[in-house]
Image 1 (cartoon, helix red, strand yellow):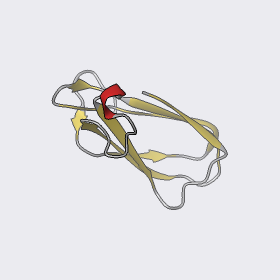
Image 2 (spheres, rainbow, N blue to C red):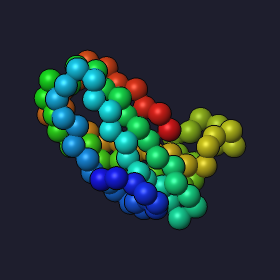
Image 3 (spheres, rainbow, N blue to C red):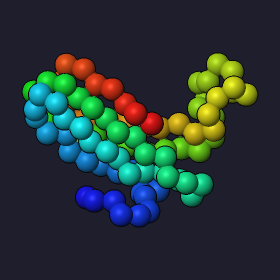
Image 4 (tube, rainbow, N blue to C red):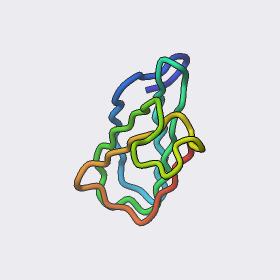
Length: 90
């Protein structure tokens, strides 16, 4: 996938391949705008799919809802994904 414009509203599933350094961008957002997430993995020994999506509003488990972003991201890895570490850029 190569994004030239637009974004997915809803679930976007992509594959995480094996490798020492693996980066995967998720071109997701909502009707209110483009709010992507990029995941960087180190030492992926078993690849699998990851599904990501954005939800508008405050997360139900937010301790102080008045002081939160009015959106949250859900990232769900497949059950066999194995890696050493990851970081997410929102």
